[in-house]
Image (cartoon, rainbow, N blue to C red; front, top):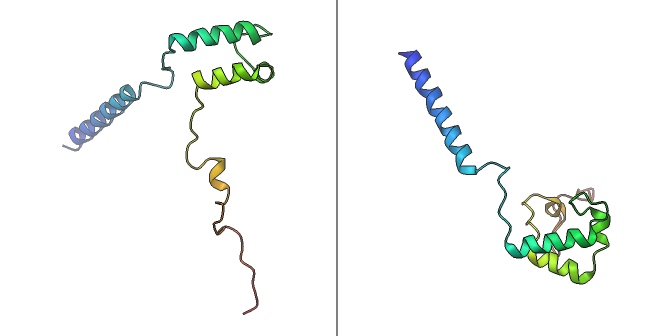
Amino acid sequence: MKKILLAAAVLICATAITVQAQDSGGKKAKKGLTAEQKQLQTDMLAKYDTNKDGKLDKEEKAAMSQEDKDAWAKAFPAKKKKKGGEDAAAPKAGGDDTTAPKADDGK
């Protein structure tokens, strides 16, 4: 009886893991680019990809004109940061920083 219960539990866990993996779609799945995004990407690579590696590195992005940077930002909005990132460590404006040690006044 214990073997049957163990086998059933393993089967249920394996099924749950498989279903969850299928639902997530995997990290390799990318969103498709719109025609406008594809065209802009092609134009920017042709204009700024000096080493012809098919990517824009930091130096190449820095060389972009402000107009092209604005067009890029509009077509490819920045991803939102997750909670708990570097902003979470900064104290809130006007708030009490509870992480700082309190001064001992000797009382």
